[in-house]
Image (cartoon, rainbow, N blue to C red; front, top):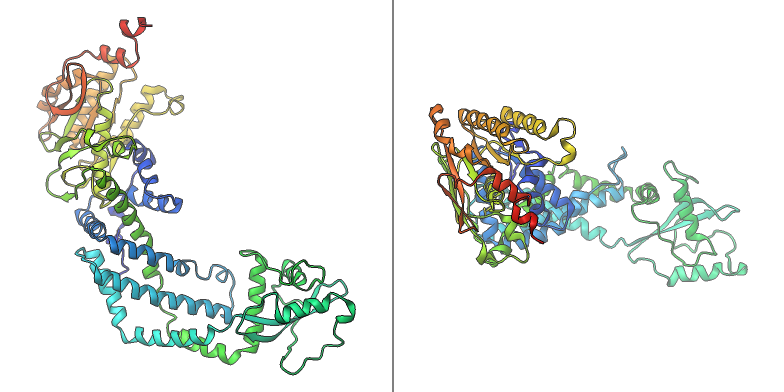
Length: 562
């Protein structure tokens, strides 16, 4: 059957466009994603998923439905997290055996047995949590059908019985007794299996007695005879693959001057691999009949696709971390809406910038929300208003709506209808070191040309003070031509600027456009106080020079005070 995915129901790469890291940063979403989880691997995964923008409404709706189910089923979320913690072994299985080509030995097969056992438990746990949850999304219903079919399949029940029997047979294996021959330098020269035991060694019993016998010369046994209860089988002094580090580790086990009776080989060390590889050899030799039975049973399930389940775990994490974050903000009074795909370019009510909600000292009751729409009559907004009045904040907020919605996540708004965009482009002021070669204006022009070339009539462009680093006259004429070109293409645009004259010339520019129109969007000011509310209205008429002077503190009052 087709491989399941909760994020990518259509594997056609042409339906996804990767946003630039600059765009994600300009929207302020990189810091939000980092706050979803403390685990770097999860942050990276969520970040990379959200950078893949899609204009396919079916994919967006698919994701929104899955997120809605996960958000409203908290117990299912908790159960999934618990399941994930139990099946990490499935993802990591065989990390030290995959780098060599050989027939599976006893230890390899025991790992495989554990893997299949964990797989069975995972299927049963997922089956239960999906059966108990109230789910409606196609993604989770398809997964439920998949695990139900597995769960109810006769082969699955047979696998459970076979594996349970094998695990019972092997569960008593706790330790292996080996005999080690030494050379004159007390180095390990050869090794052989004496017995398999159902108890682990500790510093007591046979080990304690053995170390006591080593403490004085007259306690060392005479000869190599055994009492009949042990069977020693000789192997090569240094088998192929047994490293020098392994020889040293084995020597440490029998050195009479060691401070402990049991020496531990460090985990994840090459010597661990060599010891395990070698123990495979000696155990296979001794247990060939048992190993054959183990192989026969496990070969029945060799085609089992473990990754069908494990590959879904990061996708669950993606939704769960967002659900936890939005649930936390909702409890603080912030509003979130489920995105709704529609024929409208965008109709949004009660929107706000999620970065404000992320501030610990910010009160939800003081958040200023706005309503805004994109349509043929409002295809481009020329956004003007007082400095520090919230123009950049609202520009970011609109981009965040599309960014989150196309990832299937609830958006910071009370209502949001939209047609997905194929890409989001941002043109925010660049860092100083990026403008050294071309100069600020040259860098802005080059970057805008690249954005315009790549964009379509289904793209979203967010311009922040674009072309304002030169003189007003030069910047204005460049900006005016840019707006005319964007009207011709028909992309959705918010252009926040201090160039009020650009908004005043909207009527003339609209006369040239046959289908799409631009509109003036103003941040309202009440007696000089910042309201952070926007409305479609003519520009307020304050001069560009006055705003720039206030921005950089060069009005007469600002220069002469204090």
